[in-house]
Image 1 (spheres, rainbow, N blue to C red):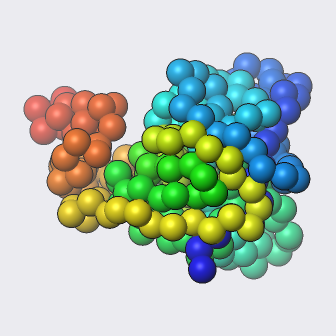
Image 2: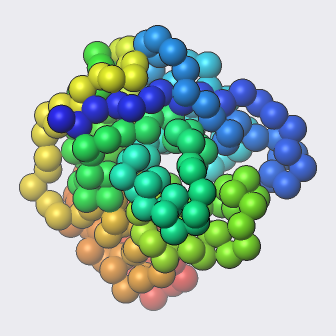
Length: 216
């Protein structure tokens, strides 16, 4: 049964290696249900801090999820335990194929309804938190980026809550495909248009620029 293993939030902490000299990426599991909502800026998870609101948080990146199965694969590769929230995820999940999730698909998680909007793109802050040379390159090559969600219906989410798939669109544009298109395989960018209205505006602009012969 797909479910939430933990809900994770992060407090503001000073971090000289971050773009803004502080970050909220270091998240930790919390107890009890947590309210999620659709924010204009920042995190959609109550009690969670987002420093770089230009690139994180907001309506399309209100909630970030990463699969425990993918964390375990990284643990084996890195030879170290990876705690829930280390990747900056708000939800550590089990039984959800996040890489194979379609743009626009909807899930009821706890009492909230979430919609898949796109993959996480690794940044320098993430690399420095991991303290591993070549981390961004390695994370990109593996192409299991986790998924961002918008909040369609606010509600409460707690560890152990079931995640119920409500709807999958009729296209085949997955989180994995989208991530590969915007990172190492730009030739795939035109395929993202198959997502129709489920393709976020920034990605649509990127595809249209490529089709017009401009830098994507």
